[in-house]
Image (cartoon, rainbow, N blue to C red):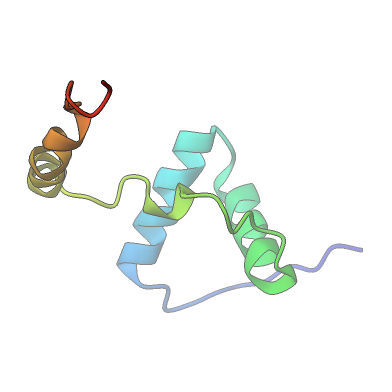
Length: 81
């Protein structure tokens, strides 16, 4: 038998994050909340995943990050000789 909860005083940021995640995953809000409860209490989440990081940067943060790592994509031809 499934149990029902009524939750109060949910922070606005949590509400927004759950709704955004539900939309991104194309799941109902209810299913998203249930999945989050299962993952946080039964430790079924994929700890090697970086899903928790997705969509956490502002546009400015993302631009700064991209600028910071841009030189990592440049290879040194002398290194490969």
